[in-house]
Length: 393
Ligand SMILES: *Cc1c(COP(=O)(O)O)cnc(C)c1O
Image (cartoon, rainbow, N blue to C red; front, side):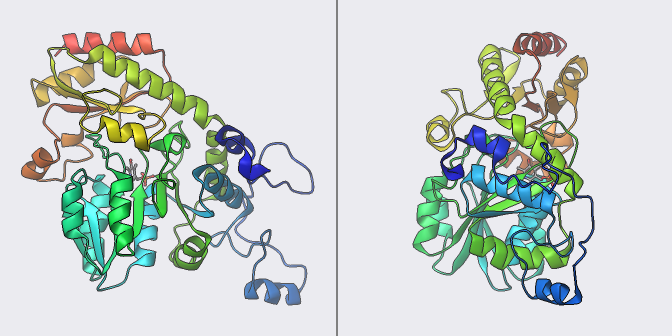
């Protein structure tokens, strides 16, 4: 039974559907719409679409449907909805379920665009959002009210890699009937135990590890069939955040190798963190797989691995961090993560530039902080490159 398959088998085969030609690789259905055999069939399809019947690519498409079924199978949810980007997934999941007057509690340490949705967009439509320190269960307990509708957090925060206790928060949230919505990008679908630990809705930016090769934007919302088809789909299909069939095909090909890539990248990230730990030019090496990480124990329970991203805090500050970035020969300066290429980012001046200085400090985004997304290059080359760039500091 397909349901009993290991994740690795599902990554290759789950949700596969073939046309009458029996193609081996997934077909790209680059079509905006679908022809009906008769006027009666068109009427019937607008009344109700069956599993292999489509109307318009904004509503659904065969290539996109394979991607949705495959992701749901590996995440362990009943269903999934694919979106044009990770942010279309975050905003779609939240806006489709929330109404004016609803109350939401969110972790404060969020990806910049997620913070914009929670802080600006939802407030504009009358949703009240209270922010807490995601790692402090007492703050969640104090903020969650009997009428709280949803909680939102990144299970591993960007860029400081705090691991948020999903099981602990889910218990508090579920006691009042609130929906637990998580952005699980840094945990990756490979190491995710989100559903088993209590997440109701799991969101990924497919742009990251799912593509894994820096080619295309995409996102996905995983949840119950009722939530995906009853709440998310009506909203998404009319507001237009659909994933393109071409990008769905790219993501499907990404999934095939995702287990191998993510495990290799995570092993390399662990080795790099261990190699650089204790270097006098670094104030901190942040990686959930290091025993001195403040939530190392939570990370062990919550994830099957510690992820592919680490953060290095260059002790001498911003100029030194810039010298470090500019001296790297292998890792490129950009802002994606989960790519096959190692990528370094200086959050304080790029992804989190918008934040006021006091908020940056509160979130641990110091002037010397560098985020490193570990790629598929040889670990020995990466360590040598990072060490020689540290010499330039
Ligand atoms: C990249 C990212 C997003 C947004 O994804 P896009 O595909 O760029 O829209 C959301 N959350 C986290 C944690 C991310 O890293």
